[in-house]
Structure formats: C-alpha cells, structure tokens
Length: 249
Image (cartoon, rainbow, N blue to C red; front, side, top):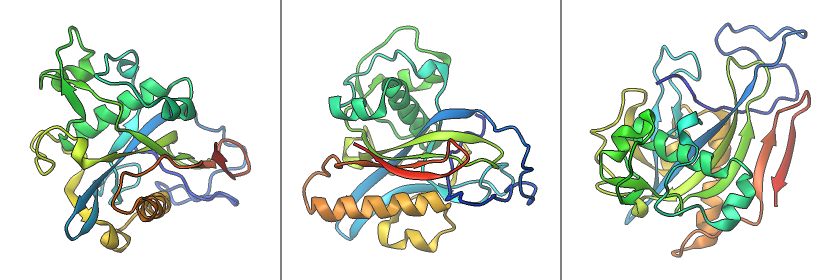
C-alpha cells in the first residue's frame, strides 16, 4: 500500500518541507489534491473514552514517527460499492458528490491498516482487487455508522496533498473483536486504543490534535448518549494561496 496519509496545518506563512527541511520555492507548482478519508474509531470503556491510533514508520516520507488515525486516499475501487447500509442522508449531503466513495475509502483503509471490519454479513460477487480480502470475511461494507466531523486540505509545501474527511465511528459498530489486529498490514505500528485523556502526550500532527478536540467536545455534548450530528463541520481549507477556516452547514 502506498503512503496516503492526509495532513493539514495552519498555513498563513510558508511551511517548511517536512522531508527536505526547506521552505517551498515561491514559484513551485502546487501538487494535485487527492480525496482521502480518515477514521476516528471511538471506544467507550468503564475507565473513559479511547480512540484507535497507530504510529507511522520512522522512515516514512510523510509524517514519519507520528501517531495518527487509520486512513488514506480514495482509490477507484472504492466507488460503486454494494454497501450493506448506505450513509445517513444528512452525512452524505455534507460530504458531497463523492460521499459513497469516501465512505468506501474509510472502511477499506480501516480494514487494511488495523484489520478491523465495519461491515455486516452479506456476500458480493467480483469485488475490486483492493476489496477481495474484506469480501472474503463474508461481510459487505456498512457506511451507516460513519459520522462526518471534520475536513482539512493539506497546505502547499507538503510532499503530498489531500482533501481529507474525518469520519467518526463507535467501536460498538465494528464486527468482531476490537482488540484483534491480526489482519493489519505493517503500515502502522503500536496499534492501540489510547485513552482520550492521554492522546496529547503522543507525537501528533497538528491536525490530529485539532480533531481530537472536536471529538472531546462531541463527547461532552453527548453525555452517555449517542454522539449527535454536529451543527456544522469544521473545514480547514488550504486549497488556495490563503488558508481559510469555515464550517460546512
């Protein structure tokens, strides 16, 4: 699997290249921006909430050694999937025309990087190559539990750029043992359910810290009940020369 990790930071001034350590030249052509999906898996335990995170390899070209959520870029095979249940209507509307593809990317990346399955029993014929292992588990992808809570576009000056949608799920919606990472690839190490209160002690990308703050706020609003759909989805828009922050209503 290729390196598809989304990242975003405040970009009101030139940002140093994380690979070379030098600021991008003023005449450098902007890189293409790829659609991506990231999954924040939330687990409520007797000792408090925890989120699923893993560590990038020290030699990775993008965000080396950082602790991140599972996720990555959308692939062609993520379009037109036979979902067991589709996205919630309001969530799909906020995600836009590529909503179903992004949901597919989120579920596939979660499975590839952690081995955890967001799906329901159901057979499907001739799955795309990237989905063959998931289909072999006897499940079809289940998009209904996904909640769109954040969006960020990687600023200029990074070695790769993504339009990343962050999607929240409850671990209770996963199929099987949430502690079973035996099917995971080796892209993320130290996979673990990290107590939410302890995440800030990790080496995190800036955008991950911001998203964790949104998760904490959502939990506070939910209490012991289900996490409600947010009134607006925060969006760090770094698509242009000037960074903008707005909310998707």
